[in-house]
Image 1 (cartoon, one colour):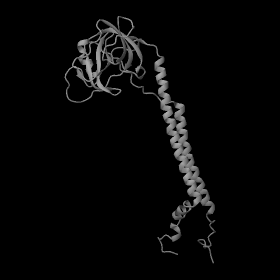
Image 2 (cartoon, helix red, strand yellow; image 1 turned 30 degrees about the vertical axis):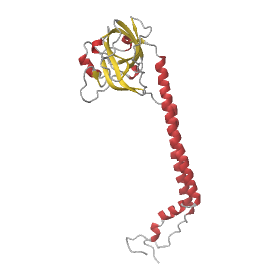
Image 3 (cartoon, one colour; image 1 turned 90 degrees about the horizontal axis):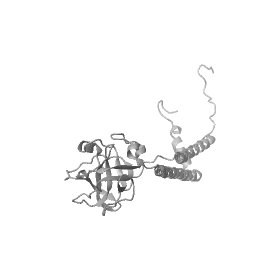
Image 4 (cartoon, one colour; image 1 turned 180 degrees about the vertical axis):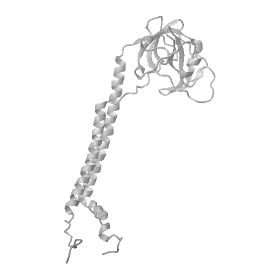
Length: 276
C-alpha cells in the first residue's frame, strides 16, 4: 500500500487506456465516419441557411413588385417616420423642381462606372421631397438641369443616408443624402424619404419619361429580406443531427468501455467494529 496522500499507479492509467482504445482500427474508423457526418451536417445546415436567405429575398422582391403605385401623399407625410414597409415602395409625386438647390452626391458607383448622383428637391403640396434623378459620370461642373414646370415623377422610396466625414466640398457637392442636414437647409416641410426616379414626365400625370443625355437612372437598393422560416428550420435540423451524431458516438464508446471493465469484487477487508 502506498503512503497516505499518494495515488497508486492504477489510479492514473484510465486516460491512457481510453486513448489506447481510441487508436484501435475500429474506433479510428468510427471517428473518421463521425467527422464526415458532422462536416456534412454543418455544410448542409449552412446550405439551407443560404437557401432561406435567397428565398426570403425573392419573396420580399415579389411582394414589393405587387404593390400598386400610389401618390406619395397617400403613402407617407412630411416629417413622418421611414418604416421598413416603405423601402422600394412604388410611388408617384407631382410638383415643381427647385433646380437652384440641386446637389451632386460624389463618389458613387454604378456598375463599373464612378461618378455622382444628381439629387434635386421637388416641391409639392405636401412638402419637399428629395428626388434622386440619376447617375452621371465623374463630377460635372454644372448639375444637369431638371425639367421645368409641373413634373410627375414615378419611382420607388428609399431612406436617407448617414453623414459621411471628409474634407469640405465646394457647392453643390455633398457626400451623402443627409436628410437631417437638408431639413435645416431647404425651406418648408421635408419628407423623410428619397424618391429614386424611374421616370419624369411633364404635367400632372405620369406618361413618357423625359430622358436627359448622360443621366442614368439609379436602380432601387436590394431589400433587407427576412429569412424563409421553413428553410431556416431545416438548417437548424441539420445542425441538431450533427450534435446527435456526436452524442451517439460517445455513448457507444462509453458503453463498450463499461462492458470491458472487470466487475469489482467485494472487499475482503474487515468492517469497522467487526471482531476476528
